[in-house]
View (cartoon, rainbow, N blue to C red):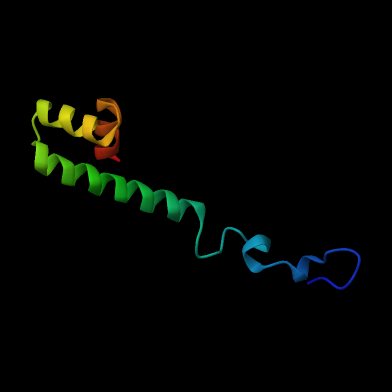
Length: 75
């Protein structure tokens, strides 16, 4: 808690003062999210098959478009 009338920079949390050095950056979250999505797609494709028809079915089951499925597999 700040005791003066103005908030001093040195009293802000480190993650606000130095957002690029914090351990939980937005880029870390984006990468983890992309990796998780890819794993889900691969698991679904193992059930539906890797053929064009299997990929269509996987996209349908996952509620994403076929183009999104292909894009996330490449990423």
